[in-house]
Length: 163
Image (cartoon, rainbow, N blue to C red; front, side):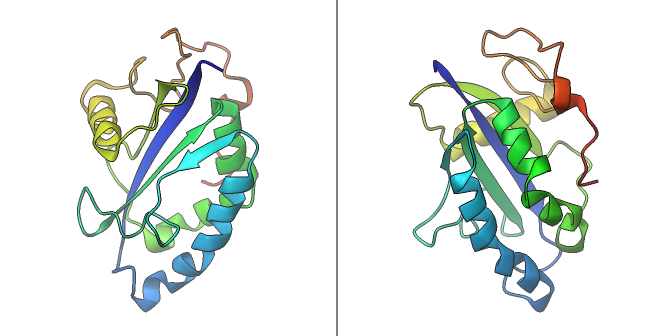
């Protein structure tokens, strides 16, 4: 494996993380993180000493960040859309605001490289400013590690069951 797929997604909370409105989301975090850690193709995820990334707020106090590395796009898509994680995705509007701009960015990194949060935020900014391309893309416009557009996305082009 010469490359890993990096992903960053951000979510603006409707209420503080410690509030009753966010309690059910917080209660699910440990199980969802464990599910990711055990998912086929999973490599790494951003986390603090507490075991999740909720204390890391590089974009703002009301914005949660999630960053991870995967073997390939299919592995990430299987986790996000075809595992127990999809149940959380279906309920995300209860806890998070709908964002008008891109909230998920994907990009390839050399195997063994762990991206920084600053690198990830820069990739999200590229996607927001210029749209999908080889350096910053999403599931709808998926690129291969060589920079070519993946024309045959297969199951990745299916509608998201969580929406």
